[in-house]
Amino acid sequence: MKKNPLFEQCVANVAPEVMEEVNLNIDIANRIYDLIKAKNMTQHEFASRMGKRDSEISRWLTGTHGFTTATLAKISAVLGEPIVEVRRESETKYIFMSMPSYNNSLGVPGNSYTNSKINSCVISYEN
Image (cartoon, rainbow, N blue to C red; front, side, top):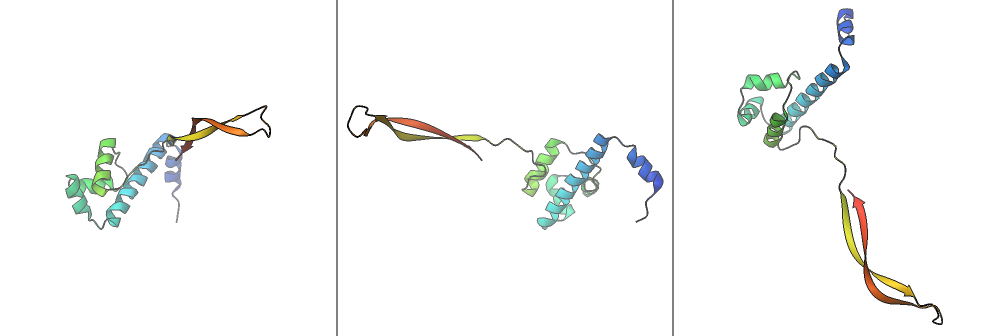
């Protein structure tokens, strides 16, 4: 593929955050397109379910549209799949278990152990 030096120069002057925004918009558009196809849905059917015109959906799928969180939530609901996923810290869960407590009976021949009471033990884990 032949590279256009003027185009390359223009792209080099674009701020990194603008490039990141453009790439994110393209990734979102590709995700929506892939889900529409995976659901065997036409763009027209998707537009109808979204309450939008076909032309608006076409603009969305070019990757130049910036989506609001409300629109992304509605798209997710219509397609039944998340469009954007946010990484969350795993939730720590706790299990309470009863465990016998043993006392060393010092002074008793053989140093035997006796169960004197029930204590609880807390175990935590992350998903």
